[in-house]
Image (cartoon, rainbow, N blue to C red; front, side, top):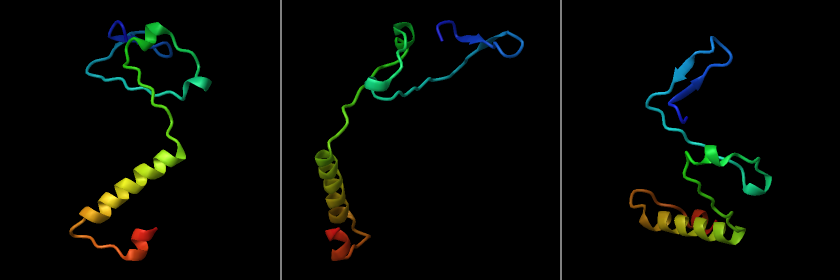
Length: 84
């Protein structure tokens, strides 16, 4: 990544140039994650989001569903569906 590509170690051992590529990566939470070097991490923006509690997830889902039921002009929902 530092030099615009890397060597193909399986094939003919030639340098493979990487052009017009955006790298995106994801990892598991830090408590079980394998360590990666700062030299590699510096290529990324590191973002950590604390897992939501069940109460928070339920509140978010409820608000989204309330908005959906209130704002959908074309779709109508039975009271039994809304109560779920």
